[in-house]
Image (cartoon, rainbow over all chains, first blue to last red; front, side, top):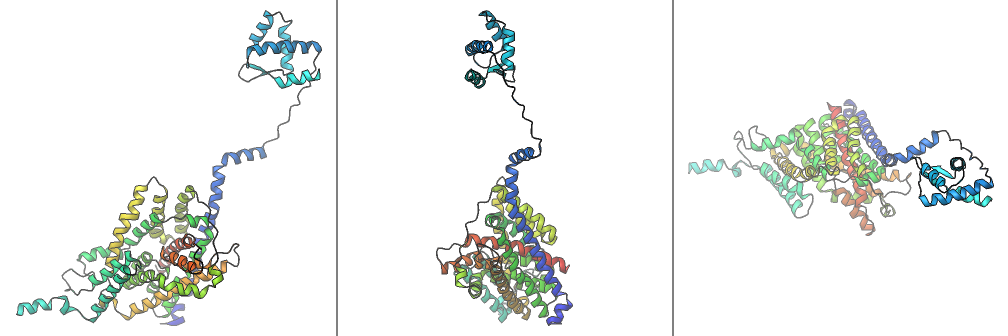
Amino acid sequence: MKGLEAIAFYNGWNISATGVCIVFTALVSLSFIISQLHKCLTIWEKRDEYIKKAGKLFSRPKKKVPRRKIKVSENFNESARQFHVLTQSMKDPFSLPKLIMLAKKIDLGRPHSTVNALLSARLIVPDGKGLYYWDHDVYTTILEKE
Amino acid sequence: MELLMDFFSNTGFAMADYRNFIMIGIGFIFIYLGIAKHYEPLLLVPIGFGILVGNIPVFKGLGLGIYEDNSVLHYLYLGVTQGVYPPLIFLGIGALTDFSTLLARPVLMLLGAAAQAGIFITFLGALALGFPPNEAASIGIIGGADGPTAIFLTAALAKELIGPIAVAAYSYMALVPVIQPPIMKLLTTRKERLIRMEEPRIVSKTEKIIFPIVAVLLCCFIAPAAIPLLGMLCFGNLLKEAVVTERLAVAARTAVIDTVTILLGLTVGASTQADVFLTPKSVLIFVLGAASFCVATACGLIFAKFLNLFLRPKINPLLGAAGVSAVPDSARVVQIVGQQEDPTNFLLMHAMAPNISGVIGSAVAAGVLWSFMM
């Protein structure tokens, strides 16, 4: 058997068409996958960055806690100046008991309540490790208002 | 005197017929092409020498000829008939090949797919000429221009044709610089041949490591019969890219592939014994093989021109000719033909992409044909 008859008899047309399709499918799929491979790898390498971004997108925006307006009296300003001088001699961060002790030594009036007021006014700020530091920005603002 | 006459009657001179001398002449041509013209010398010299060895007439029954069960050559030839050598060669090819250009421009992979159409067109041609489907499939695969793939499929489907098909496949692979340029010039304009390719992007090591794993999984899930060839190709490449297995990669791309090439070349050459090889069927196989190779080249070129209708920037359509998987000769031919028009246009690196995808494509095509014939 020869010619077109042989091709038809042995199912040649179908075999060829299917064969070409399979080869194309394999290589087109492989080509598509490798064209995306470097993009996937870039995402994988920068995964921490993307996770952070995604986290920001899905997390609830934190309500900003309005800073309490600091109402200060003239006395308070004077006390602040005195305690500022004291803290400068102690180096940041300092401990509150030590500060109070020093204040008592040099006879500053009502050291406990003054320190409490300084804390409320955020002039003295906790460092999160049990010690405190002096917030120079807030201090400058207070002085400017004066 | 009688003893001397007896001895003479046992020599090759007395037993030879004209067909042996024709084949020995072909062997000389192969050796000449390999050594003097540098056409695939690593293949043509062992095959050519094998043809000389295989065509020295010997007594049947003494265990000397390659087709006798107890001969040394027969044992070595088992690697061909049992399909052992081709996967080992693919292992070496994998360990030698850098897939960077393919990974940088995956679209060029389609050219390797298009060139495989030649295999199926020749399959139809062989059926039309009266070959049974298993033999037609083995003849068609010559168009893949991949010797090991052709041998592998023929060993599985039509063992008796291994000699002619292997010799045809390797001959056409060696003759790539002669066969392809006229077709390339015929199917492309000067303007097209002058197209310059963009610099490919830099490919990361991770991509190179992941590629062989993805390729083997995807292609072998689609065409499981391609596992012996593609599996070894990708394994060899993984050994190369993983770096930690450098010793194995070096062994695969030197000792393993060289040893197997020697055994394959020599035994395939020796299998072309005149009485088996010089038949009208062999002549038809050579004609169909040449047609298959030309059609595959043309399909790659035409598909590259077709892609240019959609691609911006355009690709040089000469790259389509590298879709046949004669690695790296067809890529070199693309470079040479491109530089004939513009000596400053370097296409070799870009041509390696369709060239390598042609290897993958022909292995998949072999797997597909094998599964259809089972």
